[in-house]
Each structure stands twice: as C-alpha cells, then as structure tokens.
Image 1 (cartoon, rainbow, N blue to C red):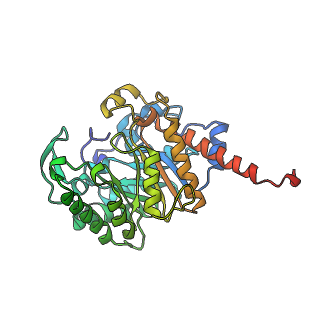
Image 2 (image 1 turned 45 degrees about the horizontal axis):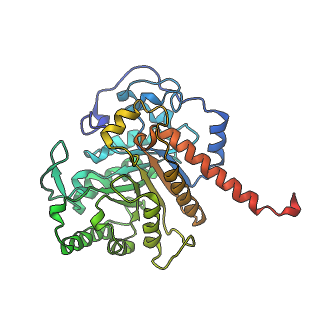
Image 3 (image 1 turned 90 degrees about the vertical axis):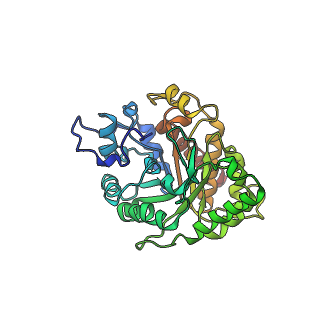
Length: 358
C-alpha cells in the first residue's frame, strides 16, 4: 500500500499543504471509546487515506502529507488506539523514521510493525511476486535485529506494540516432502527462540503470522510454544477462517484445553487483511476511496469479538488491526467491532446483576 514511495516514506522532503485535523466524533463513537477496555487496542493497518474525511479526518490533505503528519489527528479518534506499519515489510526504516511517528501520538498509543520481507520471505521475488532466487537472509538473526528490532525499539520506545514477522508463502517446490516441512518448522522455531527477550530495557512482543498452510500444523505450534512468540490470527483468504485459527490458537496456548474453557498466556494479536470473497487488486479497486463498508463480514467480526472476550477474561492485552480491503473501510470496521465488544460487555454485566438490587 506504500510501495508507491521509496523504501522509507519519511525520507521525502518536507511537505507543506492544508491542515490535517481530527474529525469531531459523534456521541456514539465517544461512548464506544469511553467504554472500550483500555487493554484493547483497535486500529487500522495504515492511515494515509484521504477518503476517511468525515470518519477520521476533519480537514485532510493528500496521501504524502497524511503519511508524514496524519498520525497526530488519527490518534485522537476515540476508538483507534493502534495502527499498523505495513510498509516496513517492503524495506527497512531507520530509528529516526520510527521516532517521527512516535512523536505524533499519545503515550498509550501502540504500533503493530511488520518485519521486512528481506528477513521473513524464504525467496527473493520479482515485482510481480514470482520466484527469483533463494533468500540467504531468511530468518537471519543479525539482520532481524539490526534492520528491524533495534530501530523499532529505539525509535518507538513504549509505543511499540507487537513486532510482527509475517512469513511469506513458501513456494511448493521448496517443500516437496514432509522432511522439508519439518526442516522449515525447526528453522522457524529456532529463530524465535534466539530472539532476545529484552532489548534496550524493553521486552518486545514478538508475533508470527504464517502464510503457508503446509507448515501450519500442530508440529509448528508445538515447536513455537516454548519460544514465547505470539501466534497471529491472520484473517486472509489464503489461510483458514477465524474459527479454525481460534482453534489453533487455543491448542497453541494449551494442548489439553477443550471447548470454551481456555486462557491466553500472552497478548492477542489479530491482523484482518482481506475479505475472503476478494482478491487484493480487485478489492482495492472495488473499495476505493475506502469511505464505506461495502462487503460486511459479520462472521469474521463475531470471531474477532470472541477472541477479544477470551483475552479480556485471560487478563491479556489485545491488538487488532484491519485493512480497508477487509470490508471497505477499516475505521468503520473497527467502530463496529468496538460496538460489538461494548455491547457484549454490557450484556454480561446485566446478567451478573443481583435481582435483589434492582
């Protein structure tokens, strides 16, 4: 989504144009923001969309200006307490770029940052995503630390949320047998085991999002469990739906857990990238300018709300970001999820009331 820019969108010359102001929220949205638990961080996968005028922005500007200065207004939205940094996947950002973002937001705001594909993709690809060669830096610890972890922690500080390693789909020819699958699983687990638990006085939340079904198995979950990494629920057509991924997360947390009686042992991380009925390019054309919900997906919303409920009962933080290509307008999707969470919590409180007190 930011590939129209150079590697670092914070590297262009200073942009001067019209002011960017936050929208004046409705009483309904203010209420949702007030009642949404502070441990739940909802947000969008990015923020530089002029089409959000009247939803996130009061006065707005162009894409480049929103990229550099829009977070100051974005973070004032009552429901949006987090945002994704997706373009870091396409190239490394430096500490100063991350600091420039952190300087625009409140101290309780959180970023979900994607690791660069130079570390998370097993192959190098051409501009159309086709195999070009093997990637010798795949899951290289030194590269991950110096090109990603250190700049993020030093630049964002306490505003750093989960550091997401989205492992790109591994081409089938590289996994011809079960032995090759097992080898990749061992390599992935070893990488997360080797990541330092403390960096510059901070304890990063590492998260892994798997995009290869052939390795998304109990063997992988068993291998990752002792490393401390969090398993991302990645809602994308290439992966199982949110209900099946919830079952995988439950197994990851506790192999003996059954039914609804289970607890999360760390933060919940959810990334909703694309509507299951759409392809990326088609969704982008269909949903632009991203100012309304075009294809509601109540089943996915319900699944995410259920996960948020489990996280709350487990006393764990939650981080959920969604893309415009999930339903058509990411901030409106987040508002609806916030509404469902608040309604669920209100209903549970009503059920807990002692009739004698009424």
